Image (cartoon, rainbow, N blue to C red; front, side, top):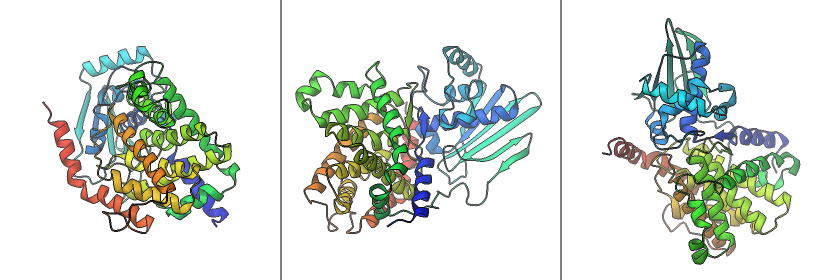
Length: 428
């Protein structure tokens, strides 16, 4: 049984990691850093220099920017300077207008933005922005987390400096989780302490609805709810889950001006942790309490795995997020802790190794693959079937199984990450 203090720590952790975001979080984090530097400067910059880690560049190259019909970092940087407000956090571009987009286009065409790779850093999430105007220069640095400022300065005089030997690389492990703690928190905490998670259902469901109002990205959600998909998949719960989840991803990656509830710095992870559980719960007419507990179980499972894996890696986040939703669905199916653990093992046995090759509209395809597997894994778990420790990287202990997954993502796929970025940057 978790103590009141442990429950409060876990609740605080979820509230830090499950937050609203407009647009893909990597270019949005860059825009946030630009907004902060511009505010320090006190005027619109004449030049902006962005020095970024490879993973930030990888995840920002091909994604739509909210409120525009444009993709990539230059427009995010320009809008961050022109209309961004750092107080909005990951909703920094909330005030974008068509007029602002026109000004941003001029800003870009005037050659006022420079983007380069930050050399000699180990941090995968690193954003350094320098904004200059006649006689003044402001610098802001985000590292470790999408909203974690570690340095701000005006004309070389620091107003914030948290750049220590390990501050830029350390993840937040202040609340150490296990799968047992995740399950117990979700299923035993007073329901009044958990109701806040319904905001994730509200926001991400609205994003899914937006994807059916107008086309975004590759319109996978619309395709999966169309006549050809219905003929193949039927008008089924499975089809509805796939369409809603991929649709929300379509809208987000396609630049819709809608907020989604992110998880561990990723909107797609937040969508994948929310929508399959929500749609399944609605279709089986789950009561409010069970739906809330299932959503908490899903989101907290994602947070637990991401604590070990880190914010950005070569392992696609849909693997992690779909593992969370599989746990939530298993719980709604009537599964206990043992069956939830089975679902985790079944997921790890299947999707481990799926690469992250940047944030982009086709992420909806990977999200859908993850969600499909989440449903299979849950059904296997409820049939008391699990991949065993004789197979692959799965261990009898579910926490060791998660450790094995994150070892693959952190260590074994490090060289893959470099090759992926090299391929992306050198395409003809």
